[in-house]
Every structure is written in C-alpha cells, then in structure tokens.
Image 1 (tube, rainbow, N blue to C red):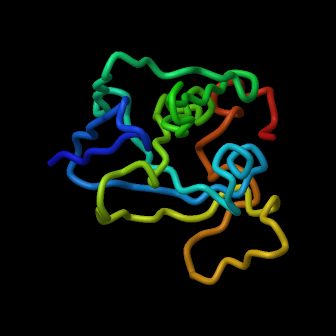
Image 2: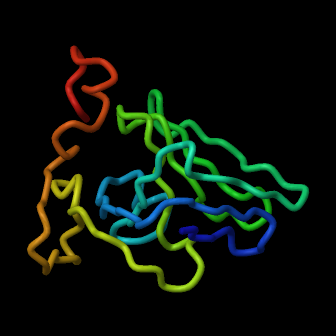
Amino acid sequence: MSFSGGCLCGHIRYQIRRERLNAIHCYCGMCRKAHGTAFSTHCVVPPGQLLWSHSGSRRVAYTSSPGACREFCPHCGTHLLVHGQSGDGNLAVPAGTLDGDPELTLLGHMFTEECVSWYHIADDLPQYKQWPPGYGPSIINPDRSPS
C-alpha cells in the first residue's frame, strides 16, 4: 500500500510505502513553533519506506536541536520531515502533509509536560511526559538523559 503527500505549493511530493500509518502527537515547544499549533502529529516511518519526488526543489534543512534536523519546502515553508532524534533511525513525517484523510493508528501523546494550558487532551491514549519508552536521545547516547 502507498500513501502520498507533499508541501502546500506542490514542489515537493513524497510516497510512504507501508501497510498502515502509525502516528504520535507531540506537544514539545519545537513542534509547536515549527507547526504553529498546540501540538503536531507525526507519522513514524522507517527511512526505506519514504520516497521523495521533487519539481526542481530540494528540501531545506534546519538543525533544531543536537542531532535532530527538520526539513522544509524552500518555496512555501511547509514542514515536511524530522529526523535524527528518535534514537531508532525512524523518520517523523507531519501527518498534516498527507493527501486526503488516510487512516492513522495513533500511538499516544509525547512531551505532555509541555502541553499548553489552553489545550486539553481528551482521549485515553498513553501519555508520556517526554519520550515514550525506547525512544529519544537516551537511546542514541545512554549517558545522556532525555530532554
């Protein structure tokens, strides 16, 4: 199965080749700033399952924290990718860039300790104050505590 998506202006497109999409809501300050919302929803994708197509444009990279990079469309600014911080090599593709309304399996909420006061989580999915167990910088460097 394949899921497609891309940026607002259409210069950058992608396909995710997998049977289903898993996603997680993140409330960290960086995600809020990058998306301009109370939280972001990212699909968790192994690198080999994400294929890019470009219309003469390449993604612009921004190092948002040590070891982590966010990529954007240089024309419209759409946030298209986060990589390097999960500790397991997976990529985070913002769900809002997917075409249509594909079914997502939501895994939970992370960085809930940074959730803004004007938004309240109203479901029974697991909530993690920071990284879910088995993810984050502590996986990359076990001597470093998650931030």
